Image 1 (tube, rainbow, N blue to C red):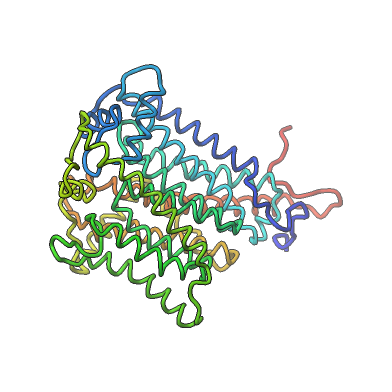
Image 2: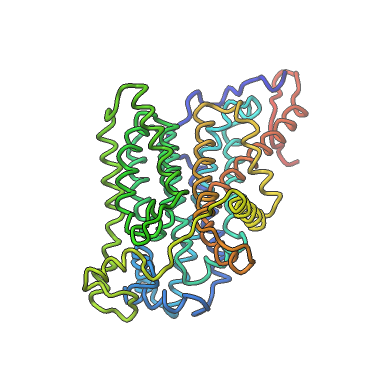
Amino acid sequence: MAEDVPNPDAPAIPDARLDRADWLSFAVTTLLTFTGYLITLAPSINLEWAGILTTGAMYGGVGPPQGYPVWTIYSWLFIHLLPFNNPAWRVSVGSAVAGAVTCGFVALIVSRSGKLLFERLPVFERLAPREQNLICGISGYAAAMALGFSDDFWYQALVPDFWTFSVLLFAIILFLLMRWWETGHRRFCWLAFFVYGLLLTNSQEMIVALPGIVGAIMLKDRKLGRDVALIVLPVATLVTSITQYTVRTWSYAMWDIPMLIALTAPFLVALALAILTRRVGTEWKSTLACTFLLLLGLVPYLYLPIVSATNPPVNWAFSRTFEGFLHLIGRGQFERPHPVTSLSAFGVELWNLIKQTGGAFGWPYLVFAALPFCILHRMTTSGRKWINALFLISLFVGPLLAALLNLPSDSQSQELAEQYFYILRIPVALSIGYGLILIATKAAGFKLATNFSPRGGDEPRLFEPLA
């Protein structure tokens, strides 16, 4: 059959370096997205937290709880490095840059990992490298644009706000994990934990992503995942025990059941692996590197009590006493979450999340997101594990977070909570990109089949030259 003819120009082993097509997809997507944001950028202060966040960034103060120290430093740089327009506009430019670079990373991940996922599909293998790059690059661009201009995410990229920066940090984590998946260089895995620590300083509720990340590491490397689960999970649980998003709220002496299940499950899997293999600690060097870099990423959170003690113009805390210090880093001004207590309530939360995601992207896009799961058996082993890892992480930053927040079903509460699930849109956008690659590859296969001729010297081509 024509589909079984391999492409003689295809490399036997893919180059681990990011090629020109990957960087081009990143650059074009980032530039075009940022241009769209810049044209529609908010000219000055808008409603909600914009005034407080802008003032906090301008003077390096303590913004509304939890303070967002990394974002404050990031926005402070934009205020002082941009030499024109008002401070609110400069902070909005920082939001636009974070949103645009996030889209660039989505395009880059799809462009790079798409070639690795589908390299064993006969019709994809027959394509010339230039045609493979074109399909993956355009699919990554389309998926990134669907994310960048989706519903409320577009709005958040136009105003002084911290959410696009949190989403950017999460996109970088997935990019680093993808590079580790591809190259095997563990320094990428270590750096992913450092960036994850920075993410926790900006969005404490993202502690829910840790079990998913640890589970993804187990899928790639059981030994490393086992040791990371046994060390990093208890350390992270202890460090975040003072916050609201923890296994047990000490002030109320209550257990958070969803968090308890999420953090316990990978720990128990790691214990089972240790018992079955009769080995533990064989990857202690990498485990300590991951733990150290995670804690190093949390260090900027100490910026808050230090600055609060200097009494800046914006200051939502008083850290000069031990009680005030704990109140600050524990977000004492926010009410603790009330997780779901029944399966029926969780079902309602899950349905609201599905409707919210479908409405943000558009329902047809979710069809593309489901396509990669239909051909898992035809992917490489590494590709199947990568898709499963993305799905696992999605479960923790989506349904688990929904169960943890347990928000009312009224439209106003759902709109206010939508920002908590921007991070979920990253793996959804990646799946959309993979689905688009699959559709484009099938279309290319049909074109190849119709253009194939048995005459000598004729070669099947995806694109015919213009007359």
